[in-house]
Image 1: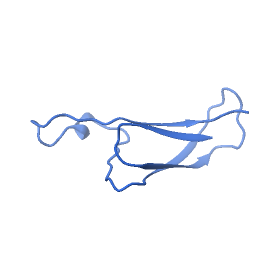
Image 2: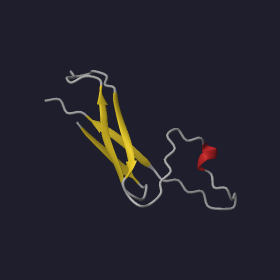
Image 3: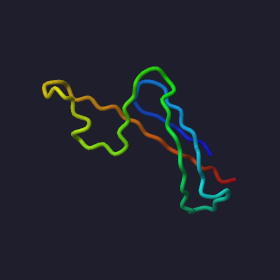
Image 4: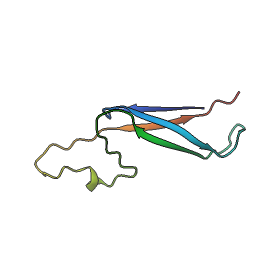
Length: 79
């Protein structure tokens, strides 16, 4: 199993897979995983998990609205 992270978030993230619901999977199985995301760099990061639009708006309403994208994916290869 591999985990990937991509997007425009500056800095370094480390993603560790900490739980799989079982050790074998078949084609079409639903999987349950648990992972931890850790800031591995020196740049402070704020990652809202389910952002509300108000959480992303700058405190100064005249400031430019800026959003950075982060996508996480877990890939399971059946062999």
